Image (tube, rainbow, N blue to C red; front, side, top):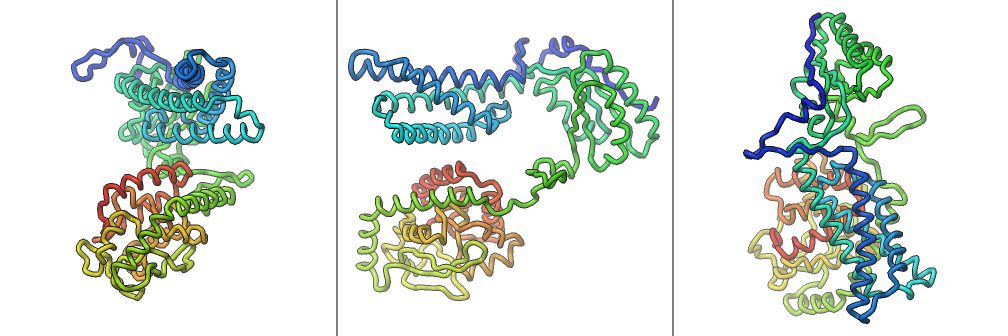
Length: 490
């Protein structure tokens, strides 16, 4: 037979092979890859319950010198644990790959933790049971619980990264069938092995141009080797461009009473990373995300109104002081109005505190640069601190803008950038924002080159395609840091 077969031996032979990293010998113990999720969920439950009880105990002893009702806080901890773990499991935050992403884990943990307590606070107020819980003990529970959960995720990140590097995971025993391109270029074998799948057999199919009978013989030999063995799964790795020729060959694997899964490679495999939907029996792949759903738009609009309204009330003294300073510094109006392009190309007038001696809104508007002679004395400080953007909170309340979204440019710049970047107009799929993903990633202020415009557009489109409320919250926090740094703000 004209084929290649590689036998990886028994699981024991795989386990005893030592791995050397930085001159150290890896330890021989192994953990199950499938056990990561339930163990992580269990640890979260224990941490939350412990934080609830110990938080109440510590606060009551400190404040009153005696323990409080520990059973009551054990019940609260159990309720929070159920909600938190259920929410995390539903969003697949307990998988090993998710636990490796520390930034995402910390951010989502904080958002969900705060959200759960806000929800329980509202429920307690509605049911008039909030008075039975000590605010000090509850706050202690919130802070210590959040710190412990994030600390645990730091530990998980370290353990999982070390385990993957040293191949400490153990898991199902599999057989891999790959075409020649997959065997040479994809790195599938290494990925499966690192994640604990034990490769007992590996079969390589010849190229499609070779004798079809050879491929059939290889599949027949694979079936013969797998039947009666302790192989738990068959994995196929193949270029989808060869699928018409391979589909008939792989159909003979149906005789095996074990799962058979496909790992696609090649350009067409990128489609599997996109979101898919079904219309009846027809599968559709989302090549471009459509407008947000009605629920998503309503939630984002409510948040915009609450944030903008609260900010205007809290910052009213600063706004009045700024208006007086502008009027005293130079002649002209307090507010600067300029045409901008909003959602779906709709025109609106953006409000800003006037920072220049000119009011430009024509076909050609030079972008502001360092030491720009058009900028007034007070205007330089307003632009550096982004206080000049505060009047846009009124644009948010009017529904023309959002708190977070792609920054709107002057009409003259829109016309210029649209000719330079093919997908520039896609930014209008959502409302423009006071701050955005591009601004907190180093693309705030002037765009000096075509590459700057392209990168800013790329970041804006990524935000549109990957929008979540959590991402908006993250951008708001990053905006505070960017304002303090003050880079490119002139």
